[in-house]
Image 1 (cartoon, rainbow, N blue to C red):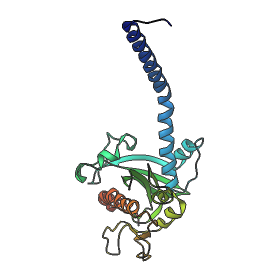
Image 2: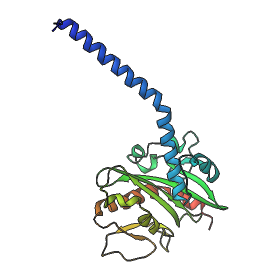
Image 3: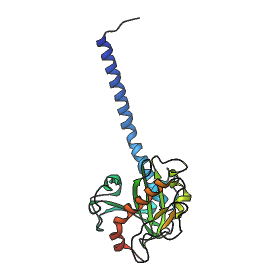
Image 4: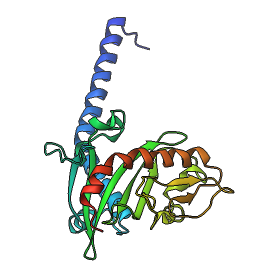
Amino acid sequence: MKNFSNLYIFCFSSALVLLVAAALSFTSLTLQPQQSKNVETERQRNILSALGVESTVKNAEEQYRQHIRHGVVIKADGNIVESETPEKLDLKKENLKPVAERYLPLYLAEKNGQSFIVIPVRGTGLWGPIWGNVALETDMNTIYGVTFDHKGETPGLGAEINTPKFRQQFAKKKLFDASGQFTSIAVEKPGSYLPNDHTVDAISGGTLTSKGLQEMLKNGIEPYQTYFSQHKLN
């Protein structure tokens, strides 16, 4: 068997590492545009889902153009931030800011001649990030539809937040009570759930994920109140 010097082994190993690193870097750069497009397509499909619009990977962009007029970013005082777009925002970072400093994304949408706004929300479940979109009718109070998803909630338990059965409960729920006070939506655990305009039934065995979702809705929607009061139509 041929013996190689330590210098040869070191140089060969270094060259091999550099070659592999270059190959991985090239692959990453090559795939990056497609990965970015996949992320954008998933964002569009989630927003459409909150409106009850079915879409596929192939037709998501077309459906999005048809139903989403445009996206804007506002501050808690209701003013539009012209220099920002919803697609550029990192909601995780924005949620760490004081409400007065936070950038708030929303989308102006239309379906069957009816106008809606869609608000993206982000929070934390039991095992990691959860997120979603909430579509509101023009009274800025009535929920038209929602979509939720998660990174690593338990299958059959917390992961149920992205099932139609759970999401359908939110349709026609109200964010404000009869006096105009913001209440958001309470996610009540089974056994204590009393149906009303401001509550939904939590997931059995997914209490912490349900409470995380409840906090996500409250913290994510409450800062929009000034905008709601300025733009509600009925």
